Length: 105
Image (cartoon, rainbow, N blue to C red; front, side, top):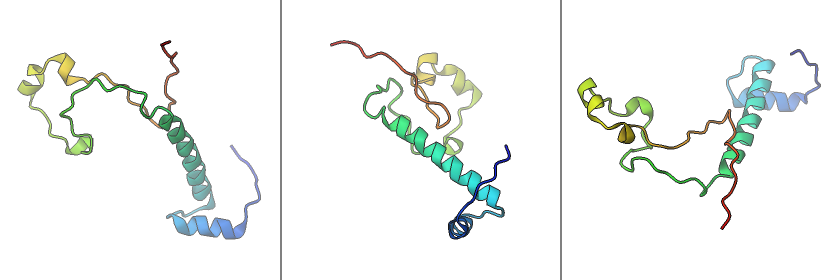
């Protein structure tokens, strides 16, 4: 979408230096993505302490997925389906958490 806006030159210079942006468009798009991501994080933080984990406690979530040990095909078939796939909802910044009703106490 083409939009013409007037942006403070000093602010644009700061933004261009803050990241490796080659064009003003890149800097503006990065700023807009940052705002959208922060809003998604705030939405996710609303769920802090309200979700119950029912998965495997032995999984080390501090390791990136690429560094996690891969299972050999024989090992992968030996794991029961319930243990192989923890039951938890994975939320991403792009999608808001599902809305649910609270149970009455």
